[in-house]
Image 1 (tube, rainbow, N blue to C red):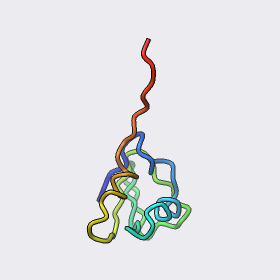
Image 2: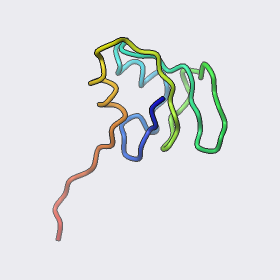
Image 3: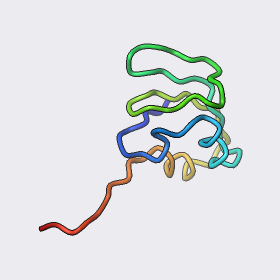
Image 4: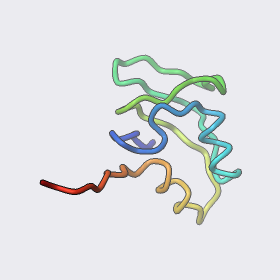
Length: 80
């Protein structure tokens, strides 16, 4: 299971969009919500929220795709 941290690209995306971007590297089989709700075989329209646990089944040696979707991306900007 991987947790969707704040500011990761997967947050606010639905299952279909995440799997499409993964290009067959993995499939989402369960979402564990922060509030305790569990969705086994979530529908394609299910949205991944900040802090949700996502259970995946994936192909070996494809961790770069997983990292690109579930690692936080921080904005860089001018500081004043």
